[in-house]
Length: 270
Image 1: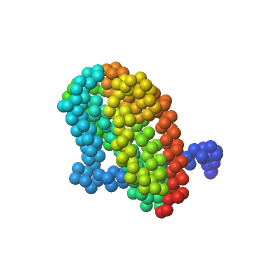
Image 2: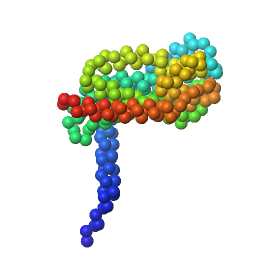
Image 3: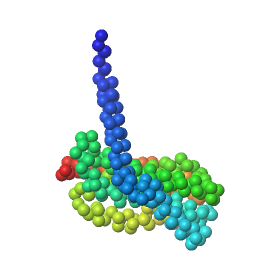
Image 4: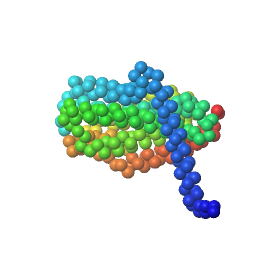
């Protein structure tokens, strides 16, 4: 006796589940390929994935620990600068690599199941995992060396996820633009460095005069840095952030970015 045919909604659900499983396998394979391409042949191998952000963040924190004056709320300068720089490293790293995401992986688009979104998502997930790993190492070090553990680790993790999503949305638009002009490759590094004083990594909102605070809170990354600091320092210093505002920016940049890469794919010559 033959089995009864599945109803149409069940068949659609099965097809969607199979398609999702296929894309997850594609992203996993792309992530492993990117990991091997970027780190597999170096002297430190895959360890460099975590060492690079840790060295840069640690060097900056150490420098300010020995030369910085007392900070508001009695904050440890080493902790403040490390917790500031590592999320900034994530934002900068994702955006700076965006113009090269499509050209360096263009041959993979011959495979029917590989899309530009898959490629960029795999690259950015790898970047996020590396930076998060470096941050966890420092948080453990802070707890052992200074006796200060994060007040709310979930807020810090949530802040890092928001930073990755925001950077991902921006990277989609930059990658799509780089298909049409080399201007993005030439300017993106310069723009990320020039924007450092504005992003909120190395200052806090309550340090600013009231009018400057209102202007600063238009910048979505400022809210994310404040959230991460709230998770680490808790009530030691006042923080100001609006998660809904950040989520609106994330939704907008990602939707625009996906539309942009869909258009760029049509004009891309393989």
